[in-house]
Amino acid sequence: MLTRRTALLSAVAATALSAVSARTASATPSAASAAGPVRLTLPAPGGPHPVGTVSLRLVDTARADPWITAQPYRELMISIRYPARDTGGQPRAPQMLPGEAAGFIAVNNLTDVPADKVDWAATRTHAHEDAPADRDHGPYPVVCYSPGTGDPRSLGTTLCDDLASRGYVVVMLDHTYDATAVQFPGGRVERTVLPAEYDKAYPDKKRIRALLKKTIDVRVADTRFLLDELPRALPRALRGISDLDRIGMFGHSAGGFTALQTMHEDRRVAAGANMDGVVAYVPDDGDSGHLSTVAAEGLDRPFLLLGKDGNDLSTVPSWNSLWRHSRGPREGLTLRGAEHATFTDEEALIPQIARRLGLPRATVVKNIGTIAPARAIPVARACLASFFDRRLHGREVAGPSATAPDLRMPRPW
Image (cartoon, rainbow, N blue to C red; front, side):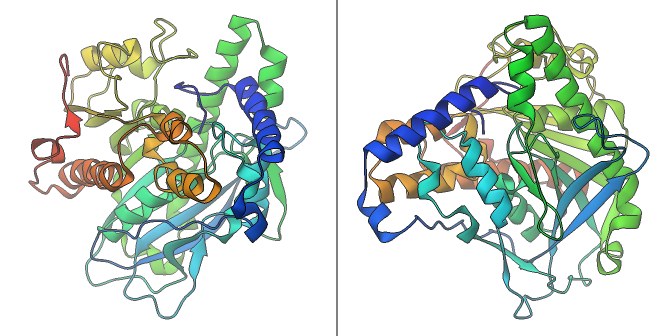
Protein backbone atom coordinates (compact mmCIF):
# COMPACT_ATOMS: atom_id res chain seq x y z
CA MET A 1 0.00 0.00 0.00
CA LEU A 2 1.35 3.41 -0.91
CA THR A 3 1.02 6.01 1.79
CA ARG A 4 -0.30 8.83 -0.41
CA ARG A 5 -3.91 8.38 -1.53
CA THR A 6 -2.97 7.93 -5.14
CA ALA A 7 -4.23 5.88 -8.04
CA LEU A 8 -0.79 4.44 -8.61
CA LEU A 9 2.55 5.15 -7.00
CA SER A 10 4.93 7.43 -5.22
CA ALA A 11 8.13 5.44 -5.14
CA VAL A 12 10.16 8.39 -3.90
CA ALA A 13 7.90 8.61 -0.84
CA ALA A 14 8.15 4.86 -0.32
CA THR A 15 11.95 5.02 -0.35
CA ALA A 16 11.92 7.88 2.13
CA LEU A 17 9.53 6.06 4.45
CA SER A 18 11.71 2.97 4.36
CA ALA A 19 14.67 5.05 5.56
CA VAL A 20 12.56 6.65 8.31
CA SER A 21 11.36 3.24 9.45
CA ALA A 22 14.91 1.94 9.65
CA ARG A 23 15.98 4.94 11.76
CA THR A 24 12.93 4.56 14.01
CA ALA A 25 13.57 0.87 14.53
CA SER A 26 17.20 1.40 15.52
CA ALA A 27 16.47 4.42 17.73
CA THR A 28 13.47 2.97 19.59
CA PRO A 29 14.01 -0.59 20.84
CA SER A 30 10.85 -2.35 21.97
CA ALA A 31 9.99 -5.22 24.27
CA ALA A 32 8.75 -7.15 21.26
CA SER A 33 12.15 -6.91 19.54
CA ALA A 34 13.76 -8.66 22.47
CA ALA A 35 11.16 -11.42 22.29
CA GLY A 36 11.62 -11.92 18.56
CA PRO A 37 9.79 -10.60 15.52
CA VAL A 38 6.06 -9.92 15.71
CA ARG A 39 3.76 -12.65 14.41
CA LEU A 40 0.35 -11.78 13.01
CA THR A 41 -3.02 -13.40 12.40
CA LEU A 42 -5.70 -12.80 9.77
CA PRO A 43 -9.46 -12.88 10.43
CA ALA A 44 -11.31 -16.04 9.46
CA PRO A 45 -13.65 -15.92 6.43
CA GLY A 46 -17.34 -15.41 7.11
CA GLY A 47 -18.94 -17.68 4.51
CA PRO A 48 -20.17 -21.27 4.85
CA HIS A 49 -17.46 -22.94 2.75
CA PRO A 50 -13.95 -23.91 3.86
CA VAL A 51 -11.39 -22.48 1.44
CA GLY A 52 -8.80 -24.24 -0.68
CA THR A 53 -5.94 -22.68 -2.60
CA VAL A 54 -3.40 -23.43 -5.29
CA SER A 55 -0.70 -21.19 -6.82
CA LEU A 56 0.32 -21.25 -10.47
CA ARG A 57 3.00 -19.75 -12.70
CA LEU A 58 1.76 -18.35 -16.03
CA VAL A 59 4.01 -17.45 -18.97
CA ASP A 60 2.92 -15.20 -21.84
CA THR A 61 5.30 -16.15 -24.65
CA ALA A 62 3.56 -13.74 -27.06
CA ARG A 63 4.61 -10.66 -25.08
CA ALA A 64 8.06 -9.46 -24.13
CA ASP A 65 8.29 -8.26 -20.56
CA PRO A 66 7.56 -4.50 -20.59
CA TRP A 67 9.76 -3.78 -17.57
CA ILE A 68 12.77 -6.03 -18.29
CA THR A 69 13.54 -5.52 -21.97
CA ALA A 70 15.99 -8.42 -22.20
CA GLN A 71 13.27 -10.92 -21.22
CA PRO A 72 11.31 -12.10 -24.29
CA TYR A 73 8.26 -13.27 -22.32
CA ARG A 74 6.01 -12.06 -19.50
CA GLU A 75 5.86 -14.22 -16.38
CA LEU A 76 3.18 -14.02 -13.69
CA MET A 77 2.11 -15.75 -10.48
CA ILE A 78 -1.48 -16.28 -9.40
CA SER A 79 -3.19 -17.80 -6.38
CA ILE A 80 -6.63 -19.35 -6.78
CA ARG A 81 -8.99 -19.46 -3.80
CA TYR A 82 -12.02 -21.73 -4.11
CA PRO A 83 -14.80 -23.34 -2.06
CA ALA A 84 -13.49 -26.59 -0.64
CA ARG A 85 -15.37 -29.75 0.27
CA ASP A 86 -13.28 -30.02 3.42
CA THR A 87 -9.79 -29.10 4.52
CA GLY A 88 -8.68 -32.74 4.45
CA GLY A 89 -5.89 -32.06 6.92
CA GLN A 90 -4.19 -29.86 4.32
CA PRO A 91 -1.92 -27.12 5.72
CA ARG A 92 -2.97 -23.48 5.80
CA ALA A 93 -1.16 -21.49 3.12
CA PRO A 94 1.25 -18.72 4.12
CA GLN A 95 0.26 -15.16 3.34
CA MET A 96 3.74 -14.47 1.94
CA LEU A 97 6.53 -16.82 0.93
CA PRO A 98 9.98 -16.02 2.40
CA GLY A 99 11.23 -14.21 -0.71
CA GLU A 100 8.04 -12.16 -0.93
CA ALA A 101 8.30 -11.25 2.75
CA ALA A 102 11.92 -10.10 2.33
CA GLY A 103 10.95 -7.92 -0.62
CA PHE A 104 8.01 -6.45 1.29
CA ILE A 105 10.31 -5.49 4.17
CA ALA A 106 12.92 -3.99 1.83
CA VAL A 107 10.47 -1.52 0.27
CA ASN A 108 8.28 -0.97 3.35
CA ASN A 109 5.37 1.15 2.18
CA LEU A 110 3.92 1.28 5.71
CA THR A 111 3.88 4.73 7.29
CA ASP A 112 6.10 4.95 10.40
CA VAL A 113 6.00 1.18 10.91
CA PRO A 114 9.29 -0.76 11.25
CA ALA A 115 8.41 -3.61 8.90
CA ASP A 116 11.62 -5.46 9.72
CA LYS A 117 10.26 -6.12 13.24
CA VAL A 118 7.54 -8.37 11.79
CA ASP A 119 7.86 -11.99 10.66
CA TRP A 120 5.73 -11.57 7.53
CA ALA A 121 6.45 -15.10 6.33
CA ALA A 122 4.91 -16.56 9.51
CA THR A 123 1.36 -15.33 8.88
CA ARG A 124 -1.01 -18.09 7.84
CA THR A 125 -4.13 -17.56 5.76
CA HIS A 126 -7.39 -19.50 6.21
CA ALA A 127 -7.00 -21.15 2.80
CA HIS A 128 -5.77 -24.75 2.79
CA GLU A 129 -3.25 -25.85 0.17
CA ASP A 130 -4.67 -28.29 -2.40
CA ALA A 131 -7.83 -28.95 -0.39
CA PRO A 132 -10.45 -30.93 -2.38
CA ALA A 133 -12.89 -28.66 -4.24
CA ASP A 134 -16.59 -28.58 -3.38
CA ARG A 135 -18.27 -29.96 -6.50
CA ASP A 136 -21.75 -30.24 -4.97
CA HIS A 137 -22.68 -26.55 -5.04
CA GLY A 138 -20.98 -25.19 -8.16
CA PRO A 139 -20.24 -24.04 -10.70
CA TYR A 140 -19.12 -20.82 -9.04
CA PRO A 141 -18.58 -17.38 -10.62
CA VAL A 142 -14.94 -16.37 -11.09
CA VAL A 143 -13.66 -13.10 -9.59
CA CYS A 144 -10.16 -11.75 -10.32
CA TYR A 145 -8.26 -9.57 -7.86
CA SER A 146 -5.56 -6.99 -8.61
CA PRO A 147 -3.63 -5.30 -5.76
CA GLY A 148 -2.44 -1.71 -5.51
CA THR A 149 0.76 -0.59 -7.17
CA GLY A 150 3.76 -1.88 -5.24
CA ASP A 151 1.59 -4.33 -3.31
CA PRO A 152 1.81 -8.12 -3.47
CA ARG A 153 -1.38 -10.03 -4.22
CA SER A 154 -1.23 -11.38 -0.68
CA LEU A 155 -2.36 -8.04 0.82
CA GLY A 156 -5.87 -8.82 -0.44
CA THR A 157 -6.09 -12.14 1.39
CA THR A 158 -8.81 -11.17 3.89
CA LEU A 159 -11.28 -10.15 1.18
CA CYS A 160 -10.33 -12.89 -1.27
CA ASP A 161 -10.59 -15.72 1.26
CA ASP A 162 -13.95 -14.37 2.38
CA LEU A 163 -15.35 -14.24 -1.16
CA ALA A 164 -14.20 -17.80 -1.79
CA SER A 165 -15.93 -18.93 1.41
CA ARG A 166 -19.17 -17.42 0.07
CA GLY A 167 -19.13 -19.35 -3.20
CA TYR A 168 -16.65 -17.79 -5.64
CA VAL A 169 -13.49 -18.93 -7.38
CA VAL A 170 -11.13 -16.01 -6.71
CA VAL A 171 -7.97 -15.50 -8.78
CA MET A 172 -5.35 -13.28 -7.10
CA LEU A 173 -2.88 -11.81 -9.58
CA ASP A 174 0.63 -10.50 -8.96
CA HIS A 175 1.98 -7.97 -11.48
CA THR A 176 5.66 -8.92 -11.71
CA TYR A 177 8.22 -6.08 -11.28
CA ASP A 178 5.35 -3.92 -10.00
CA ALA A 179 4.67 -5.88 -6.79
CA THR A 180 7.32 -5.54 -4.09
CA ALA A 181 8.47 -9.11 -4.75
CA VAL A 182 7.13 -12.18 -6.56
CA GLN A 183 8.44 -15.63 -5.68
CA PHE A 184 8.31 -18.25 -8.43
CA PRO A 185 8.51 -22.05 -8.13
CA GLY A 186 12.02 -23.07 -7.18
CA GLY A 187 12.49 -20.02 -4.96
CA ARG A 188 13.51 -17.42 -7.56
CA VAL A 189 12.37 -13.92 -6.53
CA GLU A 190 11.75 -10.94 -8.83
CA ARG A 191 11.56 -7.55 -7.09
CA THR A 192 9.87 -4.30 -8.05
CA VAL A 193 11.51 -1.96 -10.56
CA LEU A 194 9.03 0.89 -10.02
CA PRO A 195 11.13 2.96 -7.58
CA ALA A 196 13.97 3.06 -10.14
CA GLU A 197 11.51 3.85 -12.94
CA TYR A 198 10.00 6.69 -10.93
CA ASP A 199 13.45 8.07 -10.13
CA LYS A 200 14.20 8.20 -13.87
CA ALA A 201 10.95 10.06 -14.57
CA TYR A 202 11.04 12.50 -11.64
CA PRO A 203 10.44 15.48 -11.67
CA ASP A 204 9.19 15.65 -15.28
CA LYS A 205 5.38 15.57 -15.00
CA LYS A 206 4.92 14.30 -18.54
CA ARG A 207 7.26 11.40 -17.94
CA ILE A 208 5.58 10.61 -14.64
CA ARG A 209 2.15 10.55 -16.30
CA ALA A 210 3.56 8.29 -19.02
CA LEU A 211 4.89 5.94 -16.33
CA LEU A 212 1.51 5.87 -14.60
CA LYS A 213 -0.18 5.02 -17.91
CA LYS A 214 2.37 2.32 -18.68
CA THR A 215 1.78 0.80 -15.26
CA ILE A 216 -1.96 0.48 -15.87
CA ASP A 217 -1.48 -0.68 -19.48
CA VAL A 218 0.80 -3.49 -18.29
CA ARG A 219 -1.68 -4.50 -15.60
CA VAL A 220 -4.59 -4.60 -18.04
CA ALA A 221 -2.53 -6.69 -20.48
CA ASP A 222 -1.63 -9.04 -17.59
CA THR A 223 -5.31 -9.42 -16.72
CA ARG A 224 -6.46 -10.05 -20.28
CA PHE A 225 -3.75 -12.69 -20.67
CA LEU A 226 -4.98 -14.25 -17.44
CA LEU A 227 -8.52 -14.40 -18.85
CA ASP A 228 -7.18 -16.01 -22.04
CA GLU A 229 -5.16 -18.54 -20.09
CA LEU A 230 -7.59 -19.56 -17.35
CA PRO A 231 -9.49 -22.22 -19.34
CA ARG A 232 -6.18 -24.06 -19.88
CA ALA A 233 -4.37 -23.09 -16.69
CA LEU A 234 -7.02 -24.11 -14.17
CA PRO A 235 -6.18 -27.42 -12.51
CA ARG A 236 -8.52 -30.17 -13.65
CA ALA A 237 -10.25 -30.28 -10.26
CA LEU A 238 -11.19 -26.60 -10.56
CA ARG A 239 -12.38 -26.58 -14.18
CA GLY A 240 -15.68 -28.18 -13.36
CA ILE A 241 -16.48 -25.73 -10.57
CA SER A 242 -15.41 -22.49 -12.32
CA ASP A 243 -18.05 -20.69 -14.39
CA LEU A 244 -16.00 -18.69 -16.90
CA ASP A 245 -19.18 -17.20 -18.35
CA ARG A 246 -19.64 -15.25 -15.11
CA ILE A 247 -16.46 -13.26 -14.48
CA GLY A 248 -16.07 -10.28 -12.16
CA MET A 249 -13.05 -8.31 -11.02
CA PHE A 250 -12.12 -6.08 -8.10
CA GLY A 251 -9.04 -4.38 -6.81
CA HIS A 252 -7.61 -1.83 -4.45
CA SER A 253 -6.11 1.50 -5.55
CA ALA A 254 -4.38 0.88 -8.90
CA GLY A 255 -5.93 -2.59 -8.77
CA GLY A 256 -9.38 -1.00 -8.74
CA PHE A 257 -8.35 1.17 -11.69
CA THR A 258 -7.11 -2.01 -13.40
CA ALA A 259 -10.44 -3.76 -12.79
CA LEU A 260 -12.54 -1.03 -14.39
CA GLN A 261 -10.10 -0.35 -17.23
CA THR A 262 -10.07 -4.08 -18.02
CA MET A 263 -13.90 -4.03 -18.05
CA HIS A 264 -13.75 -1.18 -20.55
CA GLU A 265 -11.42 -3.11 -22.85
CA ASP A 266 -12.68 -6.68 -22.35
CA ARG A 267 -16.35 -7.65 -22.28
CA ARG A 268 -15.56 -10.92 -20.53
CA VAL A 269 -15.57 -8.96 -17.25
CA ALA A 270 -19.25 -8.60 -16.41
CA ALA A 271 -18.96 -6.59 -13.18
CA GLY A 272 -16.19 -4.70 -11.41
CA ALA A 273 -15.50 -3.14 -8.02
CA ASN A 274 -12.96 -0.38 -7.43
CA MET A 275 -11.79 0.17 -3.86
CA ASP A 276 -10.42 3.72 -3.61
CA GLY A 277 -8.60 3.75 -6.95
CA VAL A 278 -8.45 6.91 -9.04
CA VAL A 279 -9.12 6.23 -12.74
CA ALA A 280 -6.86 8.92 -14.22
CA TYR A 281 -3.12 9.31 -14.71
CA VAL A 282 -2.65 11.74 -11.84
CA PRO A 283 -0.66 11.52 -8.59
CA ASP A 284 -3.46 12.55 -6.21
CA ASP A 285 -7.14 11.72 -5.88
CA GLY A 286 -8.38 15.30 -6.28
CA ASP A 287 -6.34 16.11 -9.40
CA SER A 288 -8.36 16.78 -12.55
CA GLY A 289 -7.58 15.92 -16.16
CA HIS A 290 -5.50 13.15 -17.75
CA LEU A 291 -8.48 10.78 -17.72
CA SER A 292 -8.28 7.12 -18.66
CA THR A 293 -10.56 5.88 -21.41
CA VAL A 294 -12.81 4.20 -18.86
CA ALA A 295 -13.26 7.51 -17.03
CA ALA A 296 -13.79 9.48 -20.25
CA GLU A 297 -16.16 7.01 -21.93
CA GLY A 298 -17.78 5.16 -19.03
CA LEU A 299 -19.07 1.59 -18.73
CA ASP A 300 -22.24 -0.19 -19.78
CA ARG A 301 -22.01 -2.94 -17.16
CA PRO A 302 -22.34 -2.86 -13.35
CA PHE A 303 -19.60 -1.34 -11.24
CA LEU A 304 -19.07 -0.35 -7.61
CA LEU A 305 -16.93 2.52 -6.31
CA LEU A 306 -16.00 2.08 -2.65
CA GLY A 307 -14.12 5.06 -1.26
CA LYS A 308 -12.27 6.02 1.88
CA ASP A 309 -13.67 8.78 4.04
CA GLY A 310 -13.89 11.92 1.89
CA ASN A 311 -13.69 10.22 -1.51
CA ASP A 312 -16.83 10.53 -3.61
CA LEU A 313 -17.96 12.06 -6.90
CA SER A 314 -17.58 15.59 -5.59
CA THR A 315 -13.93 15.15 -4.56
CA VAL A 316 -12.51 12.70 -7.13
CA PRO A 317 -12.86 14.19 -10.64
CA SER A 318 -12.09 10.95 -12.47
CA TRP A 319 -14.88 9.16 -10.58
CA ASN A 320 -17.29 11.93 -11.47
CA SER A 321 -16.44 11.60 -15.16
CA LEU A 322 -16.77 7.80 -15.05
CA TRP A 323 -20.17 8.09 -13.36
CA ARG A 324 -21.54 10.69 -15.78
CA HIS A 325 -20.45 8.80 -18.90
CA SER A 326 -21.58 5.32 -17.79
CA ARG A 327 -24.82 3.74 -18.97
CA GLY A 328 -24.94 0.60 -16.86
CA PRO A 329 -25.85 0.07 -13.19
CA ARG A 330 -23.66 2.14 -10.85
CA GLU A 331 -23.13 1.91 -7.12
CA GLY A 332 -21.10 4.21 -4.90
CA LEU A 333 -20.31 4.07 -1.20
CA THR A 334 -17.97 5.89 1.16
CA LEU A 335 -16.72 4.25 4.37
CA ARG A 336 -16.60 6.68 7.29
CA GLY A 337 -13.30 6.75 9.15
CA ALA A 338 -11.52 4.74 6.44
CA GLU A 339 -8.10 5.49 4.99
CA HIS A 340 -6.68 4.24 1.70
CA ALA A 341 -5.30 1.00 3.18
CA THR A 342 -8.50 0.13 5.05
CA PHE A 343 -9.43 -2.04 2.06
CA THR A 344 -6.33 -4.24 2.41
CA ASP A 345 -5.05 -6.71 5.00
CA GLU A 346 -3.35 -3.81 6.73
CA GLU A 347 -6.69 -3.07 8.39
CA ALA A 348 -6.28 -6.31 10.35
CA LEU A 349 -2.49 -6.29 10.71
CA ILE A 350 -1.47 -2.72 11.59
CA PRO A 351 -3.29 -2.66 14.98
CA GLN A 352 -1.58 -5.93 15.95
CA ILE A 353 1.83 -4.51 15.05
CA ALA A 354 1.10 -1.29 16.94
CA ARG A 355 0.12 -3.17 20.10
CA ARG A 356 3.18 -5.41 20.02
CA LEU A 357 5.67 -2.64 19.22
CA GLY A 358 4.08 0.10 21.31
CA LEU A 359 3.43 2.35 18.31
CA PRO A 360 1.26 5.44 18.89
CA ARG A 361 -2.37 5.56 17.81
CA ALA A 362 -1.40 8.30 15.36
CA THR A 363 0.56 5.71 13.37
CA VAL A 364 -2.47 3.41 13.17
CA VAL A 365 -4.68 6.29 12.02
CA LYS A 366 -2.19 7.36 9.33
CA ASN A 367 -2.26 3.88 7.86
CA ILE A 368 -5.85 2.68 8.25
CA GLY A 369 -7.92 5.61 9.56
CA THR A 370 -10.12 5.76 12.64
CA ILE A 371 -12.64 3.02 11.89
CA ALA A 372 -12.09 -0.09 14.01
CA PRO A 373 -11.12 -3.30 12.19
CA ALA A 374 -14.07 -5.05 13.87
CA ARG A 375 -16.33 -2.72 11.86
CA ALA A 376 -14.28 -2.03 8.72
CA ILE A 377 -13.58 -5.63 7.74
CA PRO A 378 -17.18 -6.94 7.93
CA VAL A 379 -18.50 -3.87 6.10
CA ALA A 380 -15.96 -4.13 3.26
CA ARG A 381 -16.65 -7.87 2.95
CA ALA A 382 -20.41 -7.27 2.88
CA CYS A 383 -20.10 -4.55 0.23
CA LEU A 384 -18.15 -6.81 -2.11
CA ALA A 385 -20.19 -9.94 -1.47
CA SER A 386 -23.56 -8.23 -1.93
CA PHE A 387 -22.37 -6.52 -5.13
CA PHE A 388 -21.10 -9.72 -6.75
CA ASP A 389 -24.05 -11.76 -5.41
CA ARG A 390 -26.41 -9.43 -7.25
CA ARG A 391 -24.34 -8.95 -10.39
CA LEU A 392 -22.87 -12.45 -10.92
CA HIS A 393 -25.07 -14.82 -8.94
CA GLY A 394 -28.27 -12.96 -9.80
CA ARG A 395 -29.40 -13.08 -6.18
CA GLU A 396 -31.83 -10.43 -4.97
CA VAL A 397 -29.92 -9.39 -1.88
CA ALA A 398 -29.86 -6.04 -0.13
CA GLY A 399 -26.54 -4.26 0.13
CA PRO A 400 -25.13 -3.34 3.54
CA SER A 401 -25.78 0.40 3.12
CA ALA A 402 -29.25 0.22 4.65
CA THR A 403 -28.03 -1.16 7.97
CA ALA A 404 -24.38 -0.06 8.26
CA PRO A 405 -23.97 3.34 9.95
CA ASP A 406 -20.34 3.47 8.77
CA LEU A 407 -21.39 3.61 5.11
CA ARG A 408 -22.85 6.62 3.40
CA MET A 409 -23.95 7.50 -0.09
CA PRO A 410 -23.24 11.24 -0.06
CA ARG A 411 -24.48 13.39 -2.88
CA PRO A 412 -23.87 13.28 -5.75
CA TRP A 413 -23.60 9.46 -5.59
